[in-house]
Length: 130
Image (cartoon, rainbow, N blue to C red; front, side, top):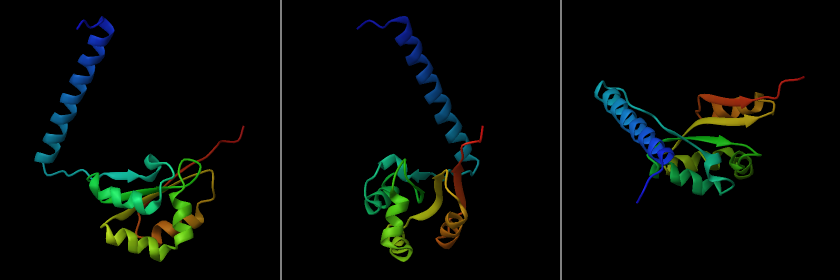
């Protein structure tokens, strides 16, 4: 099998980056630092929120970031099922709300939602006026 120069360079860069990342992670963890990963529901498209929450611990995380449309619709699903049912679902799977992500929507209600369910972060984007 022959590699082009471009393929060789891409492989070498990927290998070097991977080795450096692994070395950094080992060094950080040996210093007592632990990484906390949060799974973004948008990675699952529009799958049922119950299925997404069940995947969080399987991915090695304990927190979820719930996204609204247009990127996903789990936040809208939470409203349909009710906050108490969602809290029970998270408790069942030992998952905590890490954040909610919204785009172009007023965020006062979202802040209340995040606070109510024990989250600590709201991620939002906006379109600047020209």
